[in-house]
Length: 232
Image (cartoon, rainbow, N blue to C red):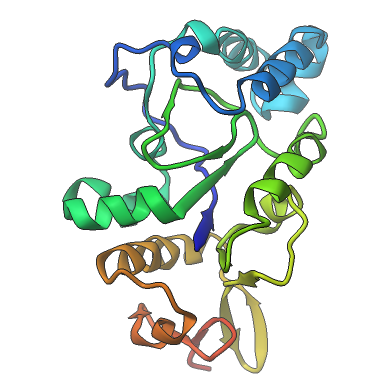
């Protein structure tokens, strides 16, 4: 069983390990090198469209990405600082819950492909939906998931395009229903997603049957997805 979750845009600049990324023996080092080489041939005028920020900041992110193999690492679960990770609250989990996450949780990344929570990674910035990275990673990520008995997919749409789901995949979505109209929870669903991942880890959940035991901020499992009914 695996649980697929997204990375976060926000990242801590910590260096909690003295290990350089080039010394981690990362499983997909060759594929990461291909991404870095692709970045190295980009023209400066293309950088703002890649990084979605000012030219000055884009150039800083660009240099950082190209130097990742010589950069110090931190565990992925400590590196990511977005709302989902804030509500997972890794440091307050028991050792048993942390072991559950390391065994079952996989994080999709535009630069690194697929990570466990404790995988050592440097600071970086690169989204999955630039430079055709979804297609770069698709065969690798699809193969990494194909032998699992069940995969719970908590990914946003942009990351779901980075693999071909088979019959073993169950997509877990969070939606809001208001006046009969159902929409994706979006940013407001990030907190509940983090809480749900924490619930899975704390309760050693391995079956969809147990999803009904989770409720947060009005979100309830209806057998197919988590729905929050808004008052008209």
